[in-house]
Amino acid sequence: MPDRTLVGLIIAAAVLFSGHMVDHVARGDVHWALTADTVAFIMVGVTIYAIIAVGLYLYLRGRVGPLFWAIVGVFGTAFGWLGHFSPFTDQPPRHILHAYASAAVGWLALGCLVALMAVMIVAVIYALRLWARPIKPG
Image (cartoon, rainbow, N blue to C red):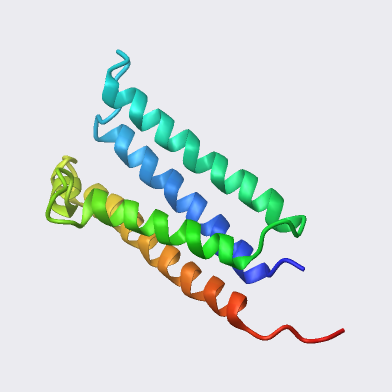
């Protein structure tokens, strides 16, 4: 039986990821002329949405369990961390803050990213706890 809290965390992460994608578009990371960067951005987004959709479908049907979400969450968190918080990124938090004329919009965009990362970390921990708990007979 699917855990409602885990499903809620997954949906919250998907909504926050959508907000983060909007931020990337608003900051000009996607151009109408198809460049290699634009195609890569679109492919990464489509892949992430596909993983979420197929994963939720399989989870709700009992085909995958919480360990699947823990693994997906670890990779997603690592991807987000490397993309925005590592010393090797070209889009650190200050880049997001300074990309907008309004400081409030910059902080909203950064807050969305931070919330996404926090929800994913909580989801990984929660999924691992679900996976590790003993199965009750009956």
